[in-house]
Length: 353
Image (cartoon, rainbow, N blue to C red; front, side):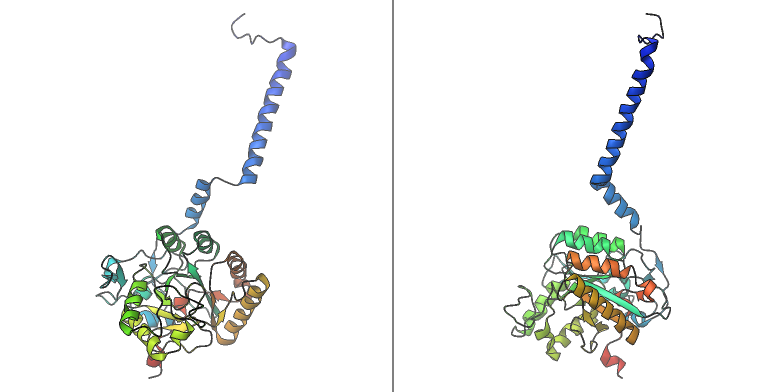
């Protein structure tokens, strides 16, 4: 055979080469169809989510609103959608009853957790404002992860004190820009049939025991802006109905530079701590048509009052799906979605003076 001779007769070389390229193209097409059907590998999905996250929290000066006044003058908030700052050691202290845990505190320079970990809201442009809290974060990892990634950064997340292995979820929530709250379990209506768990604050417990339990709750996570009585689908009505008992909780939160969200719709704003009350519960019942109707009602409340706050007790798939669809339409409806801290007001008792 001469050098450079393929060994194929001229009459066969063309059809063989053509057949080779046809097979190659068919294999490539089959691979593309398979990838489209199965979706990208998990690593690619994770990389896509990471690329969609803010790289870092870039503090910027924010116009002063109600939340700014409650949080303290002279502090800076993150830009809208920016990552929430990592827990700052200067805003933490060792727990007395739980030595291996840490509690939030007001910094020596006057900085408060409610301001340091507030999500950015941007300037108030006059549009009616709505805020939303999703509770029960951490109990079901998959549902919690979907709530973090499928809803806008302005949606607040209330973390269950009973959740475990939260490091990854909390890091993702901060990177995404979600403002975090800690959920305080309190004795609800229907107790003990409705049970808030072993660390719940109870009307029949001694004050010292309730104080110890509250310290346990507040030490469960770090880097949160406020607290709420909405815990894992319950709202602590029986405990909160006692002004002295609820006042003790409010005093502790105020001393630590946190705000409080009362999850009982229609209640007066907190009297002894910066905060506000929920206007509407969105997921009772957790049915698509009912959730949509309540979201429409929340919009109308915001138009009538200038602002409104909705609460979803748990991050159920149907709830997250409807919230994601609804928030995507708010701008076209003439409303602004803001984090809860943007609506926070000074203590009602202080404001009344």
